[in-house]
Image (cartoon, rainbow, N blue to C red):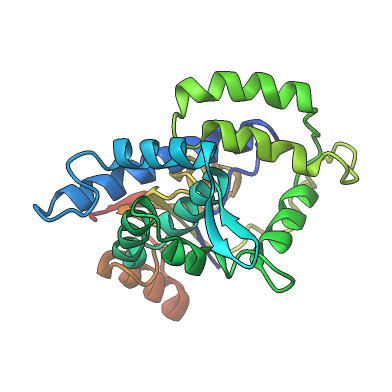
Length: 256
């Protein structure tokens, strides 16, 4: 078995969202560095400042997108977070943000389209998140967290705190006691964590590996969600584990 980018199994809300929001801020920094590495970065010398200013403008006046729809500040942040996990699409996100700054929402709408609507991914992701959490955050608690996270996570903190109330009406289960392992230990389990993963912080892979008697940790110093097969180092380790059953005996760090 290979686990690529697992979450921290020991966390529940709001600590889980706090962890992923910190990871998203870190991933945005990697996105900004990748852009400014080119002298022709469309977001200018300060991509974070560009996005901050755009979000501020949209918080006051949403950008009409036709048929009565509009791209809001919150929708823009959701679009950014959704693409941070896919470095191959970072140039597309850069172009969409610049176009939105010029009054054209089409690029952001294309990014958002797969998330919303009857066939969108948002509802499925929400159902999974709520089912995986046994803690419900009240609106008052979310407001307190928004105030704290606005300072710690200036780009995504407030929106992340507000999202916590979405699971409020969802049924919550009682505490779960992990089952004691039975029988012989399983074969080695390869657990991969990515340094700039906006969805699953590398600490989640580290904690998962600790929880498994035969966990073998691989840290990839890259960006995005899912390290396999985007890097030769990780690809070699995974292929060897799945095809021959051989896994490293010590933790491995793979370069970007």
